[in-house]
Image (cartoon, rainbow, N blue to C red; front, side, top):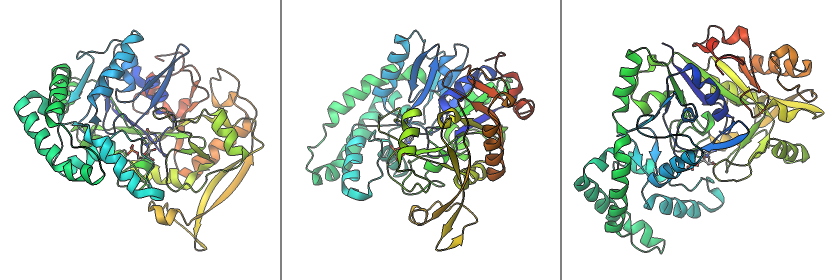
Amino acid sequence: MANLLVLGTQWGDEGKGKIVDLLTPAFDVVARYQGGHNAGHTVYVAGRKIVLHLIPSGILRPATFCVIGNGVVIAPSAFFQEIGDLEARDIRVDPTRLAVSRGAHLIMPWHPLVERISEERRGEKRIGTTCRGIGPAYEDKAARLGVRAGDLADLRVLREKIVETVAAKGSVLGAAGLAALDAEAIYREYAGWAERLGPYLRDVSDLLHERMKAGQNVLFEGAQGALLDLDHGTYPFVTSSSSTAGGAATGLGVGPRTIHGVLGITKAYTTRVGSGPFPTELFDDTGKAIASRGDEFGASTGRPRRCGWFDAVAVRYACRVNGIDRIALTKPDVLAGLGGISVCTGYRHKGELLKTFPPEAWMLEGVIPEFRTLPGWPEFARGAAGLEDLPPAFVDYVRVLEDLIETRVAIVSTGVAREQTLFVESEIRDFVDLGRVRAGGAV
Ligand code: IMP
């Protein structure tokens, strides 16, 4: 048995969906541990674009069992909408293939309303959230006011919780000039979801424990990215969950030693959606060219993503905070044809060269990035099998990144399709069974 954790090392949108989908054949279970339908994981299968938000990307492989952990927040309407969209594409989703933790918190109708009020109140300092109610759902969880998926099993408990929370939210909504919520109508809606969601609800910690005991392999799937983590990200411009590696243990109820390896997904440049510091951001035509060639629009909200050069200070930090063993480098093909490619090698703050990444937003806003510019490379050959088939200038770029982030690259994604992926044999051979997954093999 070998379990692998896969997560993003930047501000999300690193291309996790494709890599998780690609690695899934080597695993029996794919388990998502945090976030909600703020995420957007894009996968291209046989030329078809599929975007997943809440359901693990493993669902696209018929033999894979998928799990949504207690660390995830669930909007039942989004959950069933996604199941409907998948079924419309002939992808079967039912409780024999998907389990949801009874401990997962539900996104309730007041959460998006409270979020809009909070973002408006912040004005210029708004976080630029996805407005899906994610943050307020986690706030209620910490305030011990949340409604958990498991509460749907007892309608008396469900009604009581809804009535209590609607009363508690009244003053916030009233102060913003919004009408009072109708607790009874909300109860009826969620009692309806109870019937549909009920068959999916499980003790996920126990389920994973049993499967691991039986020798099954688990892939833990992170959403968003390390720099959006509530504790380790660029606070307060972060999401409200633990997207770093530690979140997998708490978000699924598994021990840390069940995670045998950590694969970081890293884009060959940097993007960010929403507000917050971004030291290597490009405001010129190069930034626009990267955005357009990389199709850098939010998979969930359609918002344009801000683009910039690769930030080795930030990714080295992410490698440390998550204990990343190897990197999957994505979208280098987007940079092909640019004259010179820059990499941020360090930050100066008030003239001093910083030793480490400062995650505090106010400090990060004041840093001056230092860059090293490397020669660009021409278009990639389609279907390259090894690094030696790629332009030498690109291979040099990979080596420079590896040195700066102090972590080796094991996978290079050279296009959106499953086949456009290159495995660095020497790096994956002994790494968490990934030797079993390679182009032309299990993929
Ligand atoms: P929230 O997760 O909706 O609360 O948004 C908080 C911050 O995280 C905002 O800057 C969002 O744009 C960002 N964010 C949330 N989910 C994703 C994602 O899946 N990809 C990239 N950014 C995200």
